[in-house]
Image (cartoon, rainbow, N blue to C red; front, top):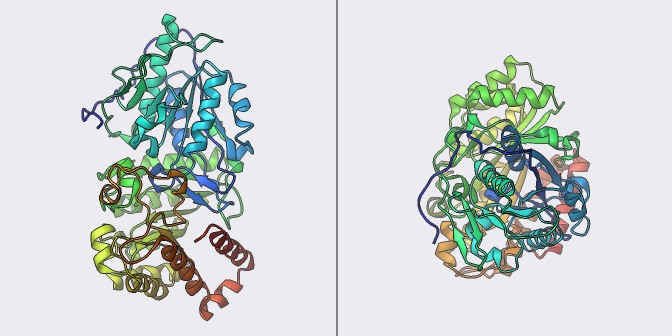
Amino acid sequence: MLPKATSVADDGGAAPRPHPMKIVLLTPPSPQAYRVSRGLMGGFGMAVHPELLYPPIELAHVASVLEAEGFAASMVDADAAGLTADTVAAAVLAEEPDLICLDSSSTSLEQDLAVACSLRRQSAAVVAILGSQVTFTPGELFTEGAVDVVVRGEPEYIVRDVARRVAAARQSGTATGPKARQAAPDFSGVAGTSWARADGEVVHEAVAEKIGDLDALPTPARHLLDNAAYSFPGLDGPVTTVKSSRGCPYDCSFCGYTLAQGLRFRFRSPENVVAELVELSRTFGLRHVVFRDPIFTTRKDRVHAICDGIRREGLDLAWQCETAVKTLDPPLLEAMAAAGCTHISLGVESGDAGLQKEYCGNKLNDQAQAQEVFDSCRRLGIETRAFCMLGFPGETREMIASTFDLVERLDPDQVQFCAVTAYPGTKLFEQLNGEGRLDYAAMTGVQALEGNEHLSAEEINDLIAAGYRRFYRRPRRLVRELRHPLRLAGRLARYLRLRREGA
């Protein structure tokens, strides 16, 4: 059990340092079998289309905070740079870092830890790791000597405080020297960390508070990224991501976002968001933007103000977001379309009212309103994607059929059927697994890890594939898809990949 005290220093005060300390923020390579996007599912990560590559925007936020402190930060994104598990260590060590901080995900955790272990073995740098998976399973990470410290929770200020402690230890001569590995610094009192003492005892420091003032964060350090390397299937040109808010009030039992970011909706001001959009457009020449908020339209007035700012600044952006049906209406959709919104991903989850209420935050409790939202998007030229989940506890074939029926009526441009996955720390995990040991590598979001009272894991996987066939093989849908042959080819490739992976 982690301590419940909550404190984090975010006042900007910095301990004195004799010189800038070198820090490398690393996104390790994806496993060979599939590409992993570590920021999805609230930081637990998910296997994705091979053409999808988002920038590591959370690490870019961390880098900007470190630079504001005077630290020398750099970023290594292995997938963007074409690095493998065999070549990534050389690229990181060439920077001669004092501190290395790796991102992680559930499905890639074993490989992430192997990379961390290699870096720790080959250098004297302090090695830290962050991500939702390690936040909720920190005690498991020290058995192989892969890391010196685990960053639990929102990382920006915690990594800064870790860097301060490393810098202070180096200044006093108590930490690792330039060549030989010695004991890592003592992280006592650094909220949001777990670390191991010299005798092997693992210490879990107090949980850090969520960041209250998101406007106080500097804009992400995009100057440290190869911005042209990032892509989204079907988009012509590089893509970037923006986190304009955190937290979600709907509390879905399976969701990693509420677990990682909390139920309280915290948001950046419209002016702050528009300033970042101006920078990424005019300074970096980026046009395609994906908002990575869990529920982008939680506050309609804020979204209206962001849209007004985009139009006022004359920004030529094509952007997309994720949100819930019940937070949308035709006037808001009209404002979003006028400001460049081209695509909305919507959490439909289930067509069964009981499952909606019990597991899905009741996000879609009015199917007539949902129909109005999807119809309005079609009228305005905004593409839609419906996210659906199959395999809830107690879910039957008939309930799954109601989900298939609903998405056919709504007729989104795309549908994504995911297997219900109980990530560590979620309410669903506590209900199904308690403290049970799981195969994290299987948490791809594509395949069911286990069945329920009515369906085996294999049956759920078969139903996911059947859902795709049923949705895309309808005559009206086939006519629409044939108008976009390249997009159709991509979807066929995804379907075949799902079949290869057992779904």
